[in-house]
Image (tube, rainbow, N blue to C red; front, side):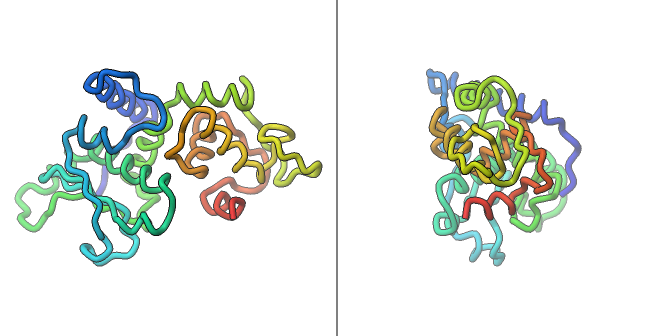
Length: 234
């Protein structure tokens, strides 16, 4: 599905508006960990279902699906087997991103087509598509609000961005922000999650969010991408 370009600023604003709406209905200020399941059901009024989408849709890499007409968010229950809470929660937030940003395009494209199920199906193979990238960015903004991230980063690493200049630490430092190097990203992520209460966020998602906000700058020749992060954590 083709969707129009949306600025990061606008997506962050929409995520903030959703958090504000949840706070208004819940009657308290929401803090990490962000209760995304409650947001789906309580604020958006959607049904949240965990089911075997692999069997239902006949595809092994399906993560989630958002059915616009029935106002239902489905998460592949096999994610419980594949990883920790972070992956599951991020997928929920990703589907929220589709609902907020893209549901009107599904409805528009489905007009006059009786076979159209009016759904957005998310597959790992489509991760680079604009619609999926937008939902990922929205999810990051929702689960890791910029204010909380910056406050936690200052406590953990100080007020200035952290510049990574080497892949490994010659001195063998184990401190998250002492002579920062690429292999220390799990320490930095763990310290961030613990400091601010991001208990339902994966270390990969946290490190990517720090890069997006310019708080972590990679000056090495090694790309700090998803594959690199998984290799370093292993």
